[in-house]
Image 1 (cartoon, rainbow, N blue to C red):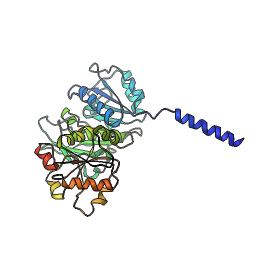
Image 2 (image 1 turned 135 degrees about the vertical axis):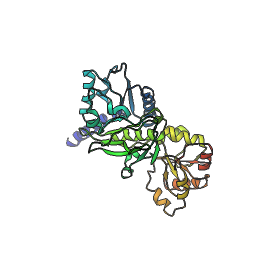
Image 3 (image 1 turned 30 degrees about the vertical axis):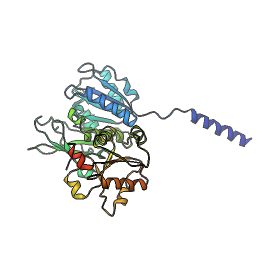
Length: 360
């Protein structure tokens, strides 16, 4: 009888497990509450990319009046809140909804004007984001954002170039609150550097803020990679494209290196958020490379050991100077068990000749 009971119980559990709904995709709510930087356009574009490439569910809420959103009910089912608002005087009920979400300990990301998002809750900046907004430098002072050396290994900076051009003016945020951890700094001529991106925590949640977010930043792959990584980090994971889905999209077979031209290589890099791998020598790499690329010298005796440290389930876009070494590297890595490898046939020379973006 005991055996029969155990069988019935085990069968019931199996049936229940089979009927249980699949784990829901993380729900990201994006608030657009400003009119200076076009977030009513850029946030829906970002949301579409997050849904198509990373499997998130996204709800974009654009303000209907200067100080009101049409509804904030989606916050009740949100797993992550992204705020891009400016000096809103929210009605008490809507501000209460924002505060209840944040007090629940769920993660928050602030973009650009989020440092002064709510005029009737100025504490949001130092308390939740860990910032100290004090205005910005003149718009005509263009500058660069740079990775903080001590933070280079942080997962939010995965695939982000060590230095890249900022789209808008540099915000003044020095000093941050003590617990904030800077990831990027920015500098303009004649002024001291300012923190540009950092992490913080409030009520046990993970928060991330960046003063980047100009429309030109959304066209920069370093910024979109930064934000995508931050979303994954805030949700407790790592930003990874669905490699199998990308492979099916382009007809790439597992374990079979795939050679392509510049146009498709760039499309896969920018639209599908794939990892770049440069296999040229040190002098070649330092003379110029694709933004945000990983680098392992094919001629190094440690190539296989260094390659073995990479995630073999990721999708890699590999290039060298003219396509010979990258083809050999792909063949080698395929034999090591790497799943998806795409090789740039004309190499870096072809990329540069096409006038594509490089950095030094």
